[in-house]
Length: 428
Ligand SMILES: Nc1ncnc2c1ncn2[C@@H]1O[C@H](COP(=O)(O)OP(=O)(O)OP(=O)(O)O)[C@@H](O)[C@H]1O
Ligand SMILES: [Mg+2]
Image 1 (tube, rainbow, N blue to C red):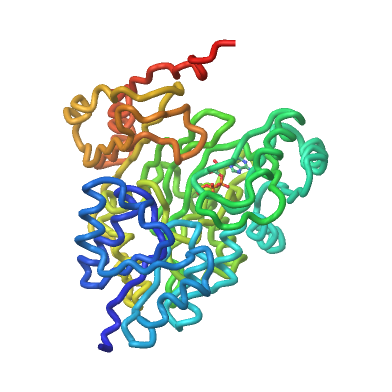
Image 2 (tube, protein in one colour):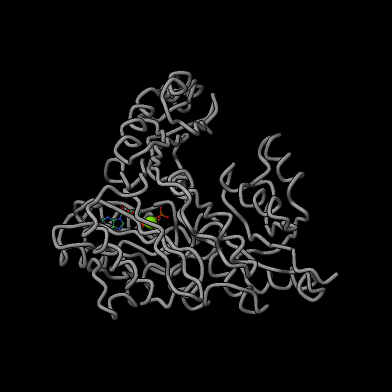
């Protein structure tokens, strides 16, 4: 067989979000292959089992932390001339996939750029060299170094890991004690969420005070195309949980252009040369500054918002690009879309999410998905991994999408019962 219609997805996100690219790839006529080191991550319910059974042509087992292992696991497909593309859906595998694509001569991001985007220190260094506006930063290798840099740069500051995603471990620290404590928490974990080794040290950064946007860009051999900007809303400190997104941004064109210029300069600085990217920017009193570059399409509901607002199915086009096809990025709609995320205010056991039927009474709600189940242990969100569900609203303008999305979120109340006291059987 020589048709190159096998498309390998190396790991993916959990839940419906993660399975979607496999469904899309199948619908596009590809044979989706899921390369994974742990299928049980994705097969968590009857419905996810049905998607995996119905859409995935083959499960390939490999040590997905290692590009050589992934490459060798796919070598047969490549040598038979069947492998048309390889794709990473979540950040953790962007560099592994770039290396595999490079080794097989498949479309993909330059491995150097992928590594630079995956490592926030490397991004900062390259962007600093290129003069991209960004916060002061230092990679620190000890608690004392962390505190010393924080004292020099000023409080509050941000202490974060270099290779996580979903804002895991990113924390605002207001005092030397908080910096020391968070440094110790981060440096005690040798691997990231998906078991890839974390580089030594943690990042300490000056705190960018401002509001956040992201710039959604697609890069092909024809150049960079900016699909638009997303307005982002964050939850309370000291965490940085993304609780809302609206596309397109409501900012004046001039500010959007300023933010876009910083995002494009950052992509140039790391040598980003292929595929979707999602560049996060803080708008500060001194102008836009780079938060980070994600060398993949925006996660959470960013892609869904783009689709509702413009008609461009970015996920679909990204799959096509990685299979060597020209993406179709022409907008067919001029609307707006907003997403919101449900979080628990308290820690405990979830008994119900009230008000879901009320959301259905509002106009434009095109998705409501509560993933948390009664009986689940929940907590006040520390990262995007803690959100309980999401909703998406489509409207004619971003202002309306925002108002309806906020209103929809207000209808939802997670009922959480207090944690049972630990060790009740053995009172001291
Ligand atoms: N130096 C900083 N100043 C202000 N806010 C920051 C800073 N660094 C990170 N943040 C906030 O924390 C969020 C998460 O940080 P960052 O983007 O670096 O981590 P991540 O885990 O890769 O995020 P993502 O959720 O995009 O995968 C940012 O979107 C931003 O709101
Ligand atoms: Mg980020």
